[in-house]
Image (cartoon, one colour):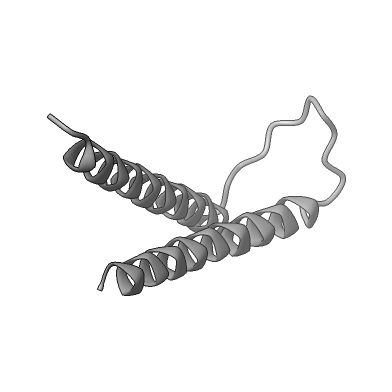
Length: 84
């Protein structure tokens, strides 16, 4: 049963990481599509760009939460297996 959990945990993290990668790629593409952007230029974000930014934030938080949760779970297993 533990092996199934490890596999599903790894799959869940892999899916979350892929979601973040996809969101970042889409955001990069949108920013590159802004015409004639110079380093000191101000850019007004349209609703589509804001949605992409939020998608990246949500995906990053999801991945971070999963990684923290799995790390805490592993630490709990290690702690429980240590001789008292």
